[in-house]
Length: 500
Image 1 (cartoon, one colour):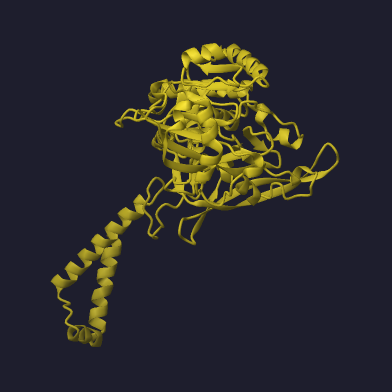
Image 2 (cartoon, helix red, strand yellow; image 1 turned 60 degrees about the vertical axis):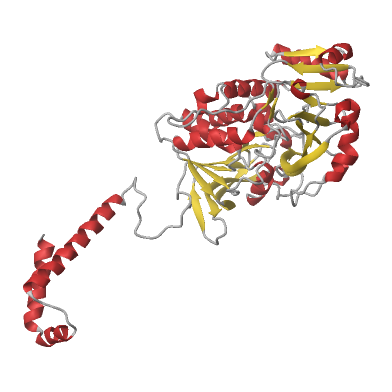
C-alpha cells in the first residue's frame, strides 16, 4: 500500500497548495471532503486490484489479452500445421496427438477454409470402403482402416459424448469383369487373398444365382467382398476424428492459407546441379470475409488440402523452376468433378444390392431402405466437366449412365431421379495413386494427397502412417514408401488397376 499512501499524500499537498484549483473543483460540483477522497481512492484501488488480477491471468495458459483479438485467429506458433480440415487432415491430427510421448508435447493446428464443409470432398463422397485393389499397399491400408472403423468407439470415443455410429453397411463390393480383363481380376484376387482380404470369385452362373436381378451378358468373372467392405457415413467419420482430436488438444482454425515464408539455401546434387532447398518458417492464414491474417510460426507443414493441394504446392514455387529439372516438376494433383445421382426405384434389388462396379465404369449401391439408390460414373478423359463450380449435368445421367445401368440391372428401367450432387476428386494425373511423404526441395512439407477417390476409406490408416513418418522418422506399421514424391521425379508410375 506504499503507492496508495504516496498518492494520498500528494493529493493532500496539491489541495493545500492550489486553492484556485480547489475552487474550480467546487464550481464543477466535485466534493473534496475527507470521506469523498476516501471513497475515490478505495474505488481506484479496487480498479488497480482488478487490473492486477487480469494481468496475472494473462500469463501463459490464459486466453485473456488487454487487446481485443479477432475470434477464430490461429495461434501464433504451432509445431505442426495441417492444411486441410477434411477427414485426412483430422486423421493425421488425431494420430499425431495419439503418438506424442509427452502430454501436450506436440502443438497441432488444423486449418480449413470452408467452415460449412459444403464443398468438402469428404462429405460429398459415396462413403465406400473395399479391399479389392491390385496394389498391396492399398489393400493393407483398407484392411487396417476397416478394422479401425469396426472398433471406432475404442479409438475415437469421447467421454460424456454419445457413442459413434458410422452406419457401416457390410454389403460388400461386387466387381464385374469382361473377358478382356478377367485375367487381371484373377491376379488381383490372389494378391487380396494372400493379404487377408475375404474375397470370392463368381462365374456368370454363380453370379446369377446369387444376384438374379443382374444381367450377366458380357460378364466373364465377378469378384465379391464378403467382409470389411460396404459403405458408411462420411460426415460421421470426419466429425468423429475432429471431435476426438480437439478433445486431445488440437487447435482448429477456419481460414485460408494464402502463402508461406521460407528460408532457403543452395545445395549441390550428385549430378553437379545446384538446387534451392526451402524450409517453411511461417504459414500465412487469412480469416474468412476479412483482410486480417495471422502468420503462424511452425516446424512442419502437412499438405492435406485434397483437390486444392496442387494450389498449396504452387505457393511454395513447386514446379515453377526450369523444365526437366527437379524444381520444374509440379505436384500432379488437380480437382476433378464427379456427379452422384440419387434415384428412386421401387422395383430395385433392395437389400440384396451390394456396391456394384461394372466394367463399363458405372457404379450403384443402395441408399437407405426406401427404394433409393445412388449411381455414378467417371466421364471419359476427353469429357471432363468444368471444375469452377459444383453444378450437376443431368444429361450425363440420361445419356451416359442410365442406358448401361438398365442393361446391367433391368429393374432400373423404371426409376425417378430424386436428387443429385457433385464433388471433387483430388485426382493424381500421374498415376491416380496417393502421394505420401516429404517433398525433396521443401524439407518440412509433407504430402498426403492425390488419392483419386479412395482417400476417405483409407484415412484412418494413412493418418497413422503420416504421424509415424513425422514423429518416428519412418513408416512403422504399413510401408508406404512406394507412394513417395520421388517416383514422380523419376517418372516411375505406381499403377492401380482397380480405380473407380
